[in-house]
Every structure is written in structure tokens, then in C-alpha cells.
Image 1 (cartoon, one colour):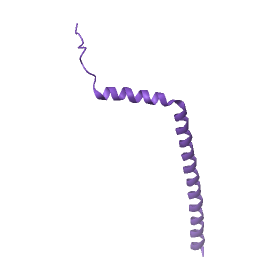
Image 2 (cartoon, one colour; image 1 turned 135 degrees about the horizontal axis):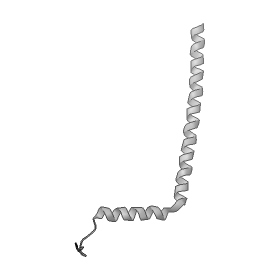
Image 3 (tube, one colour; image 1 turned 180 degrees about the vertical axis):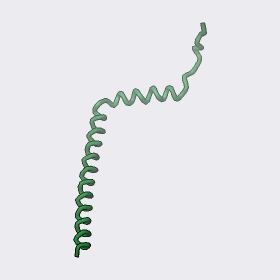
Length: 70
């Protein structure tokens, strides 16, 4: 049976990962709600911009078709 060395140190990366997970847990669901609300707002903004772009593109295509038919 192998004995553990009580003086053996844990690597810094293991300490850091433990600390970072603790801080994330401490933030709690409030921060996550804020982030999801922000993501939803960005999604709505992108959707709105895409709809506007589609409408503008359709108008341009209609104008081009009108010019070609003359």
C-alpha cells in the first residue's frame, strides 16, 4: 500500500479551478438570469435587423425588376 506524502502540494491549476468554480456558484441564479435576459435582447435585436434587411432587399429587387421591364 502506498502512503501519501502529507507535504505534497497541490498544483496551482487545481487550486485555481477549485476557486473559480466556487466563485461561479456564489454568483447564483441572479447573474444567470441577467445573462439570459441580455442574450434574449440580443436575439430580438438580430431578428429585427434581419427582418429589416429582408424588406430592404425585397424593395431593391422590385425596383431592379421594374427597371428591367421598362
